[in-house]
Image 1 (cartoon, helix red, strand yellow):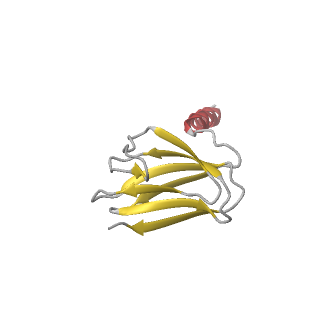
Image 2 (cartoon, rainbow, N blue to C red):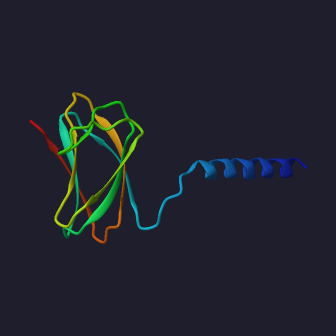
Image 3 (cartoon, rainbow, N blue to C red):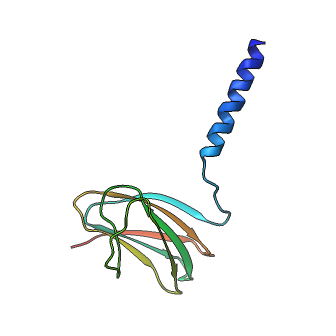
Length: 119
């Protein structure tokens, strides 16, 4: 009886932990990263093919999408389609690092991440 109780406990524990995991879409690349202070993060593809991206800021640091005047809000998801030979750039102009979650999808080539200091 004791062994059966332990077995039920582990089954319940496993089902709880499985439900917490978000469903991941096949063919998508998931990236959790930090953008250092006064830096930018550029995402592109190796062969300059188009792709789509969903980004969510998960920290209090300030992140801005390049060429947009609006600062990203914490836990709000931003989606963009990037054209052929294009990229998307996230700017962290603050004095502290900022965390971001990215989902890259609709891509056929290797994804390239490049971090640069901004002046």
